[in-house]
View: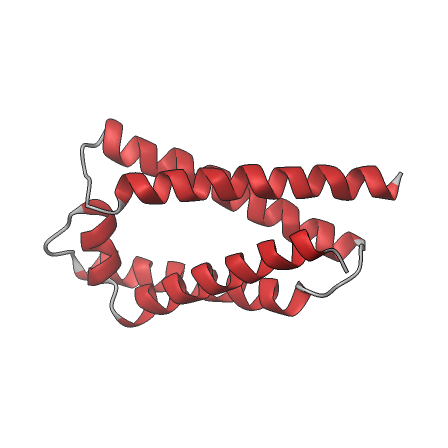
Length: 132
């Protein structure tokens, strides 16, 4: 077991599962914190809840894989997490810089997801080097 990969997956599991539960149960709170929205349409709340379920699934998958040995499934999970964190960083920058919708937690969340993307990319690079 790799301690750095284990810690990464525990962080992902905790953060994404908590965020997922927040979006599922009280989507207006993350919307306000990230985007500064005081009210959201019923459609936006519904889509937020779908995103919440997806994040909860990422969190559970990460928790369950935290002690896995190197294998193709773990590689797939790490690639998926890398894509997710990279895309979320870009989309949140777009929300703040172009759409001008910002909440108090927007920029800290951008930085956090960018750091997770770098961390995950480094772990994935090490994973691929070990498989050769």
